[in-house]
Image 1: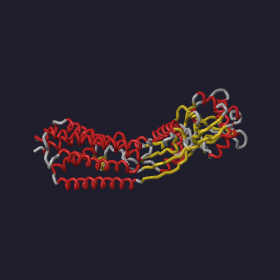
Image 2: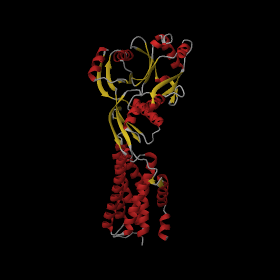
Image 3: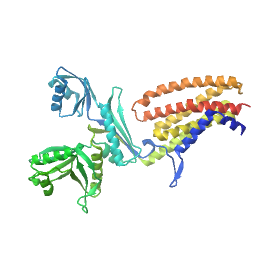
Image 4: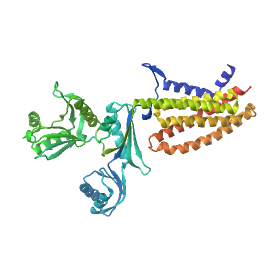
Length: 482
């Protein structure tokens, strides 16, 4: 008890204990429905789910021209039939995919020259895509979803990776593997259609429902804003749909696929002759397939279309059985690492008074790290590897402290001990700074799982230097002082 009181007299030890208790509360281990669970967030490796890596169908190009830039871009937009934005003085973002050879010919024809070419989008466009995808995933109701644009050092984003827990591969491709562009067109003559409006004019979206009530047909109602309602009225009048509805069917497209096609009703056609109509309804079919299509349409209408088209470049699915196997292997690896570390430390010192505090500090550091991770980081295989690496480097630094402060297995005088401890902490601080500097590029770059490894490593090093190493120095002094 006297040694315990002496330990609690040091603020470093008290701070460590407060962090351990707080972390235990944050992790909150418990049994629910007969299963052990915690508040820890698991990445795709450790729970059932899907990942998609999508490629942007666009390019960022450098150019030179003697013409006024506005005229040059205007001509290019006409020739390429694509949205083109000036993102730098000599760089354009073309939101439609074209091979380099095609662009070189069109740039020359427009009075310019192509100087560089890279498939992808600008960082700003990638962030817009990320925001829209996150909105779609929120509407889907999924949890533990991650959207990571993979941006290069030059600021061009070629891919975006999405990880979804508890979502099938087919559903993920329907929701986030498509652009989600909604369009209304009206038939003119034969099979020809004319554009009326896009989904960006939609104000509110209803939930999937039967229309009329009691029917078997599923669909989604939506409301146009004033500009959209005006566009819809003008398009219906210009095509003649309000005067002869049967000859001018209205088509609704989602990603260039027809989701609804039917003539205007007689009542709707009559009203459109005199006033704009804001409330519309898109039918998607009957049965489970119709309901699924209605839900997908609702999500795309609510979140909006991506500013650029995407294609699925890679995908994968982690079944529940495999994720549980990974969890078991990670737990066994962690226990094996702890036992191996304990055995090596005991072989070196042959003193329980040193081995037990070392292992206790090491495990406490992992608990604190996990507590922080519940708020900022999902745990995947790379993060677990980082935890084991933190355990190893942590023991290395505790050995440095122990060897530095002890003289022939004994604790020196208080003054000498403080000097030696300070010198040991200085060595550890330099080592920690080296690790942090080495990990920073991985933490700042969007490299998905590697980023998680770097973040866990950096946090572990900071906790060690700022909290657990100083606390260990005071604890070992009190334990071995006699």
